[in-house]
Length: 158
Image (cartoon, rainbow, N blue to C red; front, side, top):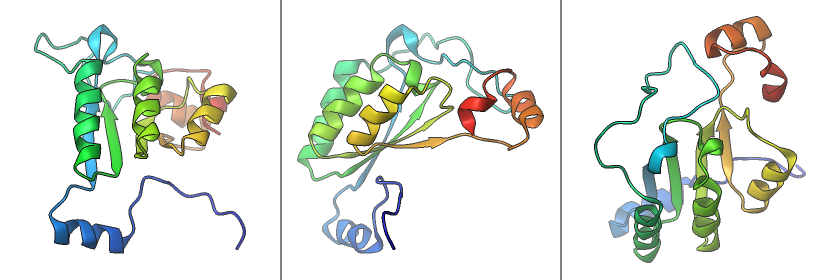
């Protein structure tokens, strides 16, 4: 069948069953919003429910994330799936955390609007077997840009 491109951060049925049998976590869902850079995005999607201002409560620091990822790895975890309060590619801590997790042998999956993707970053993440799930609402540029509240980025999506 040749080379098949698929998301690396998905476990097969057998691995999920083995994880359940051993009562060990297989997936870590961790929200990333670190320091003062959280909740920033180039877009203003009509359906986004993330507030533009940071909450006044405590958020995880990059060191907290490293500690959590390390503990997860030590207990046998395999897959990290992140949800960001904003665009991950704008977070200066994103790539270092990905590098650390993938150095340990963990798989990483994140959601991104992909507006900030560059060929260099794409190559870097590809070599680390990172899976990014991009958001594309429509192949019609007018609809896509109306929903994202921004213009000029359609070429980055398709």
